[in-house]
Image 1 (cartoon, rainbow, N blue to C red):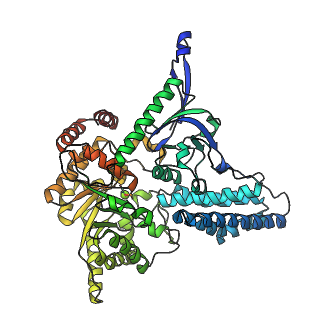
Image 2: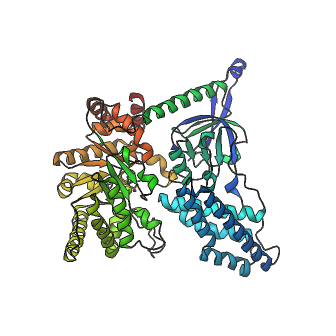
Image 3: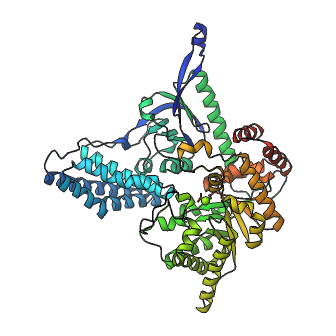
Length: 589
Ligand code: PEP
Ligand code: MG
């Protein structure tokens, strides 16, 4: 994707002389919404590279130095962890993980080997060995793995800084600025004063990177993946950021700055206004009740803190329990987490999605075979069918927890009715086994993700077989548009507003509404205020999203009437391209 281009315009001064002036415009992926105008603060911490490739001073000395800086690094990390433990225990845990990474046996053996036997300079060995780990984890599309990459990078950066005697620049800001960085690492954000960050721009990182997650949770506009960013910008240079468009205008003129300041003010007001919708139940302007659920991943206290504002857990991505562990989580371990969430939500439904793993989301402790097309491979339910013991253990843990609340089991990556039959058979078998052991099972509902077009087209048949369904628009879009959701090279083809998406959702909603079975949407489209009225107009009455989107979605619901939403949906179904849909929605909401 073209990252940098020039826009031509006429400033007053230039216009008087009749000449054109050019603004450099950078382009990346808008990862958290908003506008900003202000000075750039370049943060280079993560871009440290090794100085020497070949050992300049004897292996022994290099090895000693490595042991010394590793010790210093661990002391530093311990200090940060202790200082954070009281006010932010969740973040403190990150620095415990960093200590584990610095101590990792395989990494240490590799680095020692490179220095001792291949005569590499210590910083080169650190850089390369970590690079090998990073290149594996960076490729993984899963958010948890993406966060792990940031952790590895953070530890590497700390070791290299200590090796080269470079002071930690830190991110202690004295005035509000737009941060430009390679990527933000967990240690950058640990003590970050979010009130001093107008916007965040990074060279690397996609919508699921650590930077994106932090920016979204702090409400900071962010544009990521801007190639050549750090070469293009200067310290203290002025910039205007529009993360909705994914653009950064460098050296904007006065009129542009004023325009962006106005946009920023409107955006902040809108967000404050949206926050006033957070606590109430969601109703349309015509008083139709809409259910708003929460998407969770690790069941941490932070995640569950949003529970007072939602009607249910619409999606519990249980794979995070597996990916955050060093071995398959045992039944008891899973049971404890599921029980915690079920008890927390009481009678409100908790939709626990069974393991969505495999292919490009490998579990490091399982030796999964390589696949050329992992998204079309042995993923999710298919993986579970081919690993029956793993699947049964999870189902058993869910069913044991079911007596503590209102459990819904949801199956990912369903492509046919055969999948539904087979998964239900697994559940029946586990229930029968448990009954034989006199173990109690609560009332449960079984549902499916609609994220593969083949099952969306069979929604009428599927609706008869299951108790509920949820549209996984993230995958549905990737399979419908044949565009890898994690590949920025085909990002223009991944079109959430593709008219075909809305046509398929219409059919799916009609099928489930006719069958009287609940249908929700838990992909990003269901968290997009622009899409909410259309989805209501297409018959959707349940939405599930990350906590950060709840207020804005409730506000979008409150601003819609069913009648108007239906009119908008009818119009969208007539449109021919994603651009037309976006344009229509932007103008009519
Ligand atoms: C989806 O595909 O829309 C979805 C919610 O699942 P995930 O993003 O975890 O694949
Ligand atoms: Mg999915």
